[in-house]
Amino acid sequence: MNRRSLTSPALAGLLASALVACSGAVDGKEDAKKPIVVGTTERVAVTEDTPAPFDPAGSYDVSSWNIMRNTFQTLLRPPRSGTEPVRDAAEKCGFTDKRNDQYSCTLRDGLAFSNGNELTAEDVEFSVERLLRINHQGGPASLLSNVDKVEAEQGNEVVFHLRKPDATFPFKLATPAASIVDSETYPSDRLAKGFKGTGSGPYVLDDFRPKARKVLLDRNPDYRGGPRAKHDKIELRFFTSPDAVQKALDSGDIDLMSRGISSRYTERLESDPDDHIELVEQPGQAVRHLVFDTKDKTVGRRAVRQAFAQVVDRKQLVGEVYPRTAEPLYTAVPSGLTGHTNSFFNKYGEPSAKAAKRTLHDAKVKAPVKITLHHPQSGRGSSSAKEFALLEKQLNDTGLFDATVKTESPTSYSSAASKGKYQVYAYAWLPDFPDAENFIAPFLGKNNVLNSPFTNKEISKELIPRTRTEPNRADTTKSFARAQNIVAGEVPVLPLWQGKQYVAAHDDITGVAWALNSSSLLQLWELDRGVSS
Image (tube, rainbow, N blue to C red; front, side):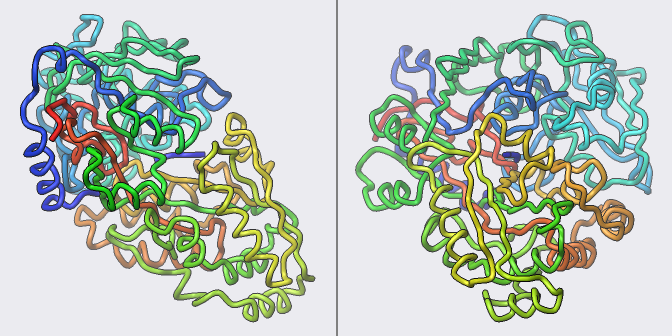
């Protein structure tokens, strides 16, 4: 299960300057026509969870969002650097009241979809109402569920009436969940069939070849919004393992890779500056959790989850499995965001079998506790198998647990997890937007993305609503700290590590420093081809 790394402006500027300096201008017309090939270990597939992979009302996975981010427009979009959304399809946007429960946007003039149809305020109204009406299970409708009513006004203005105040609403309008679709093309009450998409973004989806694992994108000459695409053609290729995509980059079969970069590979690139491959490192907000089925007769007991938390050694896990690409994470909210606090470490301290034994004893839980950990099967070169083998060893070495690890089919993993078929399972989360709310609210409220039975009224009824009334996000620190402390005490999820963000590319590719936004989604319009140094 995967769903949604902020770049320091100064660092990103230096990186971009360095890349431009070594690349120079485009050398000849043939280079300009040659597609830039981007490789990734993510996959696009039609499954029970994603029957329409490029329909904004249905898909909520990083691979589909990467394509939608580049082929659809939203009123706002993530910035090149920083966190505040900037204008895309909108000419202007803002709250119209002090309560932050009414939000208005005025569209740019001359917007059109890739099929030639005009893009109007009525299309925005249709898109949001359609998302909420379909409310596809596992889809992104929850991001805009606070919208009570959306109205298309004269002068291409759109007004959103919110059920409750929400200072983070502009961030949500900048996600692919708020993609604007053509009301004359998309059905209003069901997902669109097939792999085509009619949008108005920087690129047009030209072709998707599931068997060849390729997506072809062409520059949209009629795009009106943010920066225009710098290169005519982009080809996305999906690989089955980190080793495969790394070999493709080494051989020149691809120009850039954005996910699946191993610790071993980053070390090699950093130690060999003459191989014509540039490595760009950025702070990351991708996180790994373990999720507990709180209805299960074993891990449904809080004491079992707390004892589990008391023996997991994150430092060893990161040091042995992800030594260069991740950092230990001791709370639900990753470092780098307002409100982050090390709640799990503050409560449990260093790993202690003695403390865990006392926790189980006090709750009259007999040891060893038999549990099963689940994670999706991954290709050769993946670190996931090593990670779970080490977790199994950490638990069993205490004598308090009898843990077993099972690998599951990646095509059915998400669906099975959401149906409560796993006791404890791995969950990777990439943020929809860079705010602490997006690491707490999606997991702990009603209709949460995990379909977890666990809820907490203080978080969902008091803390999250309180943070949404604060336009100054620095004023949310106490509320988010309290929410993280509740998570550490109840342990519905157990944070393990926070990933760093890397992009590796041949040195004739420019714009690499801007290729990922704050939600770890590809901004393919930033890429261009220069000359090798």
